[in-house]
Image 1 (cartoon, rainbow, N blue to C red):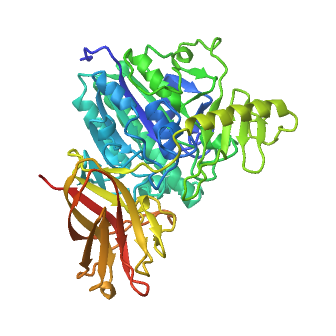
Image 2: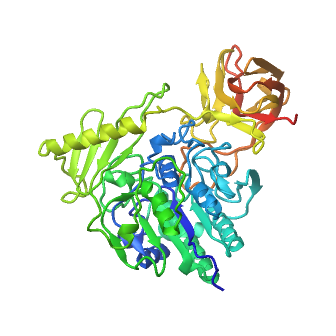
Length: 568
């Protein structure tokens, strides 16, 4: 039976590191994506749709309708991926309007409450909050704040969770956000999909990518079938896009640039939107549009008139969906990739301005200008021929950059003591390090840990904001060999110091990981926990510092600090 409610459901599907060219309908000669190809033909296909060149920035803009630098998100790790909890998200808007809200997949906009999915409006969450996951088979995932064991391949598992949410909420309007982590590294995929593309002579990395996309395509087919089975399709808006350009050099429609590039290939992605009977099938939309436009578009399509958000950068795409392109105004879209140092001084380069005709690149040494209508592959820099155009686009870009960075760029401070999240885990990648301490995998991405302790002054330091004063329990997650037992670890929390001798050696087993190519991320392994003691914390900001050095290199590894609010 067709549901009685009139407001449309929304299924928003986001791929991770999938390029514009990773689809058979975009003339990729290898990958097969029949479901996405069909979805593109059943509604509107945007020919020039843009996102940010990196994961977390795109997600922040998608969820808020605002450029990511306004939201506190500037990069992908070290706290710079965390969106301010004061930002009003798509989920909060639709929850207020009476929608059930669920997210299933990769969040990447804050690991701690209130910046995590539950704090930002999602009533149901299954997935992970960091920038990537370590294992895709039979893994542990978060479900509403608790870690749970899953069975199967992660894209299948996330789809199962989304299908359950749709089934549970079939009689009322729902917003189902499915940010898959495919085809992000580490490159893991079931044999059948990998072997399919290896049989065509494709290299291991691309065979894994195409296999992950192929599997995701099948899972999207499962979602569309579920909507059909529940007779929800006619009253459900389905959207598909990716969060940035491809994560490897592969077919991408002859565009210049991949993920993390401010060239066309780094930020132009597929964008399909289907609403049977409301959006005409086989619609191709030429005017440029972007991730910042999604929130105002969905709000208008859903008929939501009360909108208590921060000022939006995006504009509703409904006129384009209705075929009203003649009066669509010329606009300039902007993007930026953070290049900074430990002081978080931010530079305006690299960045880009994109109009219907031109792409302007704001460079460190020299600017560039391309005529994207005459030269879509960016073969010819025409800045010498069009200096006035370049000057105007640089002026627009610099004014935009000054505006969106008025609050500065700095990691969001982790908040501790909320009743909704009594245990806060301070992860190694969010700390500052001094002395010889360094990350195991060098890059400090999520899941990495500290090693290399040598001198007593070697330290890892976090800043926290205690929202509820009182008594807290402190613990560390660690690995160490027998050579470290009997030595002490020191933790300073605010004005208090905890010192404990490590009596138990623990060398965690690295989990078997079926990577198709060698990863750059840290591997997953087991960790021991050592309780350090109790502290009484005042309200407000304070430092948490761990020291574990001796007079020589010590075999000690630190994953995180656990701070638990105790009942009064």
